[in-house]
Image (cartoon, rainbow, N blue to C red; front, side, top):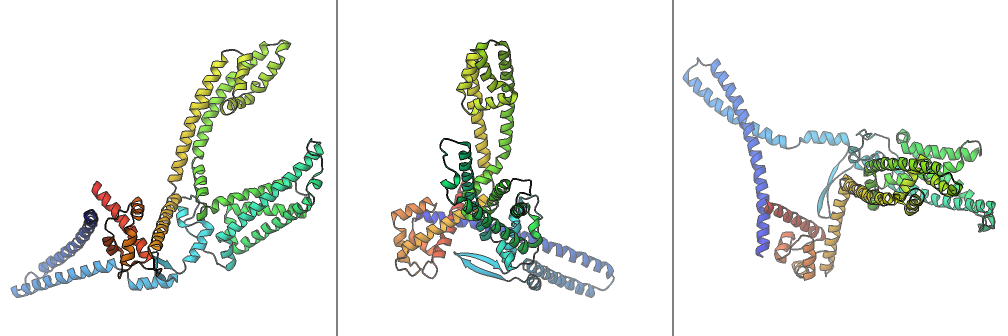
Length: 522
């Protein structure tokens, strides 16, 4: 009890200090404005005395009294102006509301007050087409203003995330069908080449597959063509402001021309079908909006943030390997030229395969570093010089182990840093923690509500809060419960506690506990 009382006193003291500082700031601002008003009134009074200084004493006394009254009136007017400045102008609010055509509504959701506005749905749909204002903060190409379009049902349909998800699912299914088509072509090629295990034509191995694959090509092509028509009709000129839409249009129109006029295009139709696979990259744009792809979004964000480190690491490793490759190529060429005897023919050919040209030597050095290094080390030791045994070991330890370990460490560090500093990831983590807290408090409420009426009375609350497992569970969430009676009085409303009140009350107590902890550290 003493610990809870001390904790509450500390939290309340911290809040009182913050309120006192804010109150002092407001008083200082009010005094400054009043002093300015007094100075202006003094100046006007002095001007009046200079102008009417020759009049009698009675008149001067009347002017002094009038000046004092004027100062009081001016101070009251200034005070009223200050209070009016703090409040919104009703006429201005009405005018803005009439202009925007939106009404504000205050609602209560999960114990929290939220403000909603009619007409926000239109802005949200426009934001889905070009990203929200928050997304444009990190975009150099964003205009910063949402384009105003005439919305229709078709526009709402093609810009809905569900439509994007449906099209991406169709692309995935089309990719699977294309893999079966590639397998079918491989079976036929193996039979034509007379390979050992391919003894039958593809039509005999997969009967009817040719017809099915041809029909699926028409089905998916028609779906993508309909999608293109719907997007153009629904979005209008906005459709052509996205490079991905241009890519989709070229891919679909290329398929249409190739299908209608078969063999006319100088492009392999398989390339057009493979280009359709690149549309899967639209998933990367979709995962930025949907909450079910948090892990994939973190992965893509981390990879995008580590591109710079990857390029610099490759450049450094390539230059180092190029130096070693030029050195070993020179040594191998001299060895081949020197060993002209017929008995060295096989060894010379093997040396040439590994180090005969600069490109072969560079590839061999990357093979030594990243792949199977003993065969190359044995070749250099047996056919060039015994000392290359030391060279191979030192190269493997320094480049193949130490340097690659450093590159991996820097790469991981930059990858995690890019993921941790991403604004959307931080926002999603905060939202995830809040949702987890709500679910935990709701499960606690359901366990405590024995009557099932949706409300907790004092007896039910104290009973569940006296359970040692519940106490330890709440302590793991930074909420120490030592007096359930006092906690009930802090959270209850009209002698009972509802689920939203429990969620909001525990959140406030956790926030107060953190504030008290910061106050103690100070």
